[in-house]
Image: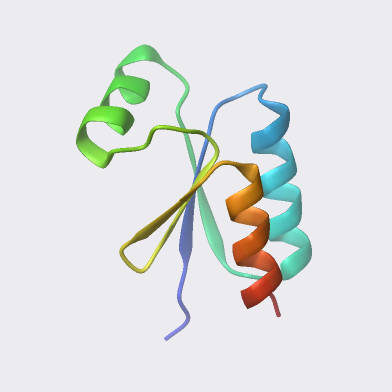
Length: 78
């Protein structure tokens, strides 16, 4: 079974767009979750503990912010 990561993004965010481009180029499987309203943004920080977007969820661990996502991709990209 192939792992699929979850990328949490904010619409219009340059960092979110760049994180998605990096994941596409890496060929790592991912699903994009768009935090496109106030309720979702609040739920992300309260329920999921996300403090920074974009955020990538990988097997129980969060990589928050573009730099940490890029570091993860660099180490795990195909």
